[in-house]
Length: 386
Image 1: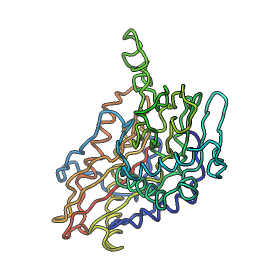
Image 2: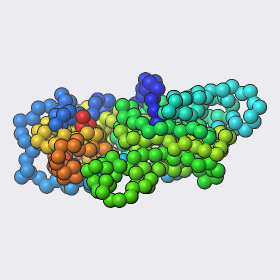
Image 3: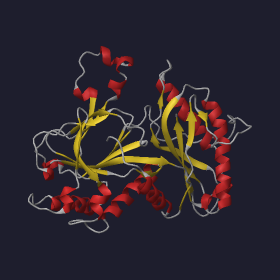
Image 4: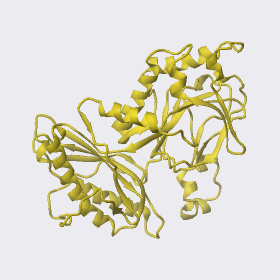
């Protein structure tokens, strides 16, 4: 994906847009961060009591895998009419190669020898105005991405997306770019099923490759491309998300010089994971403050437990569903989980399982008096391991 543009303007709009979603109270404060051996920053208040192992039964945290999430694929991400309209804007501007319309001259040929080679332009500028653009397309696209980020990733903003075009000879070599956000995304406008070129897939090193010397990979005989590299095809209207800490790239496109028939994608990063509250628990400032105090007291005890375990890296965003009948947490499940265990000689799967169990037990036994009401409540809580 490569370096992003500054996030200032779009981040501000993104946060404002998310905050305006129905029945959602977005708290613009940092996620809970854990440094070194899972030490908490000042976001969590000091607590006097340890987690009570003999306390109320905690529902098991649902959907926790043995490994961190690497890639997520969402097909037919946009409404088909919106995806087709965005694509039609591009096609209209390149239909006549003799055209002198200003929209044809907005592309940057980005060439870094041995690393990046592609045509790119800021997506917002490209789709917001000019010949062939459809009013409202950019706003609908931005809203779809922001809604997804809030609902599925616990992220409140995104970097300004790029629109990139690849023809023969263009590619991205292996790189990482985890400084931009916890999830990178690629939204394809490529007519993939009609292509005549080769290449163009998003490539990521497999877990077997990354763990080559600590798994059976080095002694299993032959390892070929499918075992070493994961390739994700950019099907039309497919949203691909991945952990940008993973080495990744774009396989070189070969055999097509017409931009209308090459690889066309929007790409960027989801950013700023923040807590948010929905339902009766967020009906008033006093209820919200009480919920935050309840969570922070429990987190202070949780962090003490996690300090005893080997250190981890990554982001865990959990969703707590809270009963409107009695204010008890009914379920805890991860929205996103990129937590990996630092190499330390311990069994990584066992450490991950223990970390997730501690978190599930701590959050699953909470009660929120302010959540009692006619509806259930929901709290999304980001935890960042550094």
